[in-house]
Amino acid sequence: MKAKQAGVLSALLASICCLGPLLLIAVGLGSAAGLVGRSSWLFLIGGIAVLTWAWAKYLREKTICDCEHRTMQERRSGMFTLLVATVIVFGFGGLNISHYVFASAPVPAQVRTQLANGLSRAVIPVEGMSCVTCEIAVRHALKRVDGVKFAHVSVATKSATVDFEPGKTNPEQLVAAINSTGYRASLPNKVNDSTSMAENKKANGSKTELALASAGENATATTPDRISLFKVSLQCPAAPQIGCGSASKPILLDLERQPAAREAWLNRAGTIIAVVWKPESDAATRRNVIAELKEDYATEMQGPSRDEDLKSLLSGKGWYRGTDVDRLSEEEAGIIAARFVRRVQAKTALAKDKAEGLEHALTDAIRKQLTGDCSAPGQKQPSIQDVASKYLDRDQLKILKEVCERGVRPLSNER
Image 1 (cartoon, helix red, strand yellow):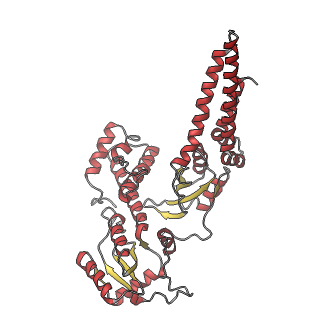
Image 2 (cartoon, helix red, strand yellow):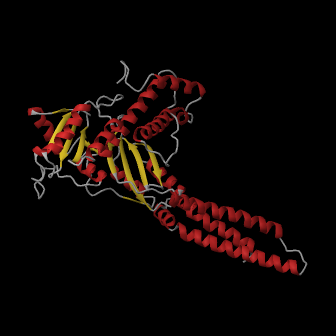
Image 3 (cartoon, one colour):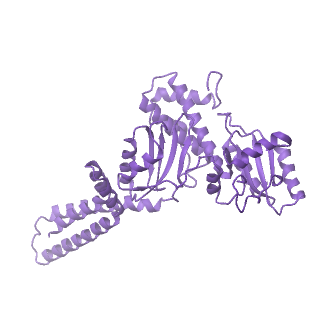
């Protein structure tokens, strides 16, 4: 085999790792696509090995020709072919290496998180993706499912985030669509509501014993006298029907750092904070924490109203602990984004796809602002205007700026 031919072969081997899955999916061979994607490193190593051999052969032939003072046939075209092959091999290699350099911890499955616009959101772990072209294959399969409005696939977090209409599809069908591409997706054996305490426990990485309604060895571990409830006013300014995640998060985390407190929870409405005390905490230590709460923003609950809210807490539904209040911030971001888009549409015409894309982009940008989520430490968050420039022209951006200046709170004619 000539060096030139070997160079072409190396480029083909390297490109198979990323382009191969897309071609196989296009012809209906999804399972084979996943197999190729999971074996990407074998093709890359093969491409690098063949390319190394091609360069060695080319340089050896060139040395011999130089020594014998004769011209090497097809010298210029051979050099050009090898240079192009080198760029292709290392280009596709870079795509795969970036997956490891920028990878983050796999996200846990989150199923049927309710959004403000009537859609549900599912975050589904996906295994087997090796580079950015794998994202394209999975995203294409998801968008073909009837009822899917938005799909974002990340090889870095090994997950797919999907917004869908609950009446048209469900997480099981989304998993089936992903698996049809040959990549592996799955849901937990037991699916809990996104606001259930069981999922809150998992998100915070610690065990809670509040489920007194379930008989078991911990059924009497936490008694009502070890729980204090406080009236607070932590409603979301943009959506008064839910609690404000960004305002309540530091409060809850600070409470759990107190020596006497074991857990701190916020109800969905943002009107009650519950503190679960450690068994070893004494009355004096608890009083200090309670005094700080009362001084700042809270009123301790007593009597029948406390009993009703205590039942709600112990049921495990509609309460958020610690960083899990970020889910309220995500919901708030969706409400604000939808409100901004409606205000813009009231003043200028927007195509449906642009309006939907703008809403999703604004939701993600506002969510990051509310939760402090950055893709890299110290990275500056893009402004709303920067995010919207992909969907709006100059005049429409001016309208959006005016819309934002009116604030995030609902106006008298808005919901």
